[in-house]
Amino acid sequence: MARFVGRSAQLHRLEQMLTSLTDGRRDRPGRALLMRGRRRVGKSRLVEEFLERSGVPHVFFTASMQPPEGELGLFAAEVASSNLPGARTFSGVTVSSWDAALRLLATALPPDRPSVVVIDELPYLTGKDPRFEGTLQKAFDRELSRLPVLLIGIGSDLAMMEALNEYGRPFHQRATEMVVPPLTPWEVGAMLGLEPAQAIDAYLVTGGLPLVCAEWPEASDLGSYVAAAVSDPTSALLVSGERAIAAEFPPDALARRVLGAVGAGERTFTAIQRAAGDIQQASLNRALQILLTKRVVVAERPLSTRASRETRYRVADPYLRFWLAYLAPGLAEIERGRGDVVHSRIRSGWTSWRGRAVEPVVREALERLPLPGVAPGGMVGGYWTRSNDPEVDVVIADRSPVADQVRAVGSIKWLERQRFDRRDLSRLLTHRSQVPGADEDTPLVVVSRSGCDVPDVPCIGPDELIRAWAPPE
Image (tube, rainbow, N blue to C red; front, side):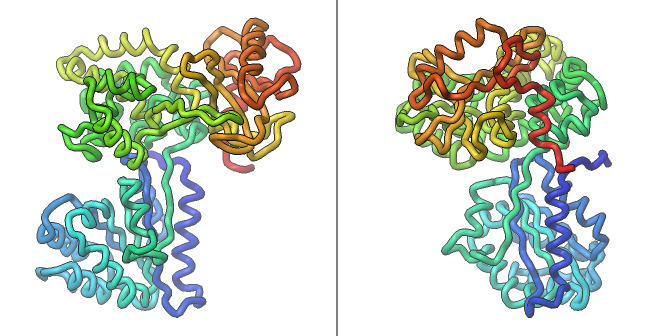
């Protein structure tokens, strides 16, 4: 099994929940947790690590989109082969309903010590059987909550998992929620043994997905890893994107075609409409709404003190952004043994693609970092007009998308061997004067991969950026 890196906060929270089962402060010690995160982000691996460290009796069931009777049979078999004290209760038993299965499960759990029940891919069950939510809620209220058991439901459909705990749903206020993010750029660097600039590059390609990072040879450079990955049709770098798209959208879904257009680099409604095949405006609106609801695509507006309707769209996940831009169009070539063609395409377009892809990563880092002369707690975005004149990489304000105060304006220059110089400063000063809410006293911030030749302007490099995600000392 690959070395487990990071997730200290999530593991600590799981351990706290397990400890609370026997702290004697609750007449109903059982607890429930709804865990969500993007597909392939390592949710199941996190829970496996937690179970291995805790050593408590448990059952780990993964739903598989089968008909209800098939899922019930797999669930019974999983419990029967688990290390729960009453696992043999399920041996040779055929359960006819989830109500019966969950009531029988309660008899298999230990009454006097903690145990864990995991239901992975929970949305598969709630989607196939609309009654499952209510059945699970009833079993938890009547049986499971009376026992020292931690019930963990895991799912990759972010919107569906979030909705399970909403008002009016059977499980409302019964479960704690946990979001499992990808590995951070700092964790990617620690896992792969990379310097900060290389770690950020690796994050843009892997998206912090543990399964992709796990196949990256430690201390290997980006070019070597990508060249090897695109020569292997079964590599995690290729397969993870295919599986994520297939799980989220049926093959003929219009949303999938629209996502391809956004992933190819189209950012405006009109450009996406044209790239997706000149589909009707109403159809495009529906497709974009699906993508936004599923949190696959993000809609952004210019950040300033003036309201704007100039919306831009981008793929939310860095890995999927890379996969859609380079790997999805090259899958046929890779399958016939021409990964070298795809790698050449990546090399030739890398600098330009990376310059755009790194922007949301930099903005997230700036929200986490203390900046000289800038009040903390600001929102970080960008500013642009319909003509892209100006187009400002960084705007820091008190709130978003319409600010009361612009706190700083900045530039991102993410190039090797090209430092931020006086020409870049002159351009930034001109652009600052065009941002509504900014004036000549608004502080400047520079983010540069290769450093800065201009004195008296705060310059943030890869070392400072990566520290935005470093664990507290």
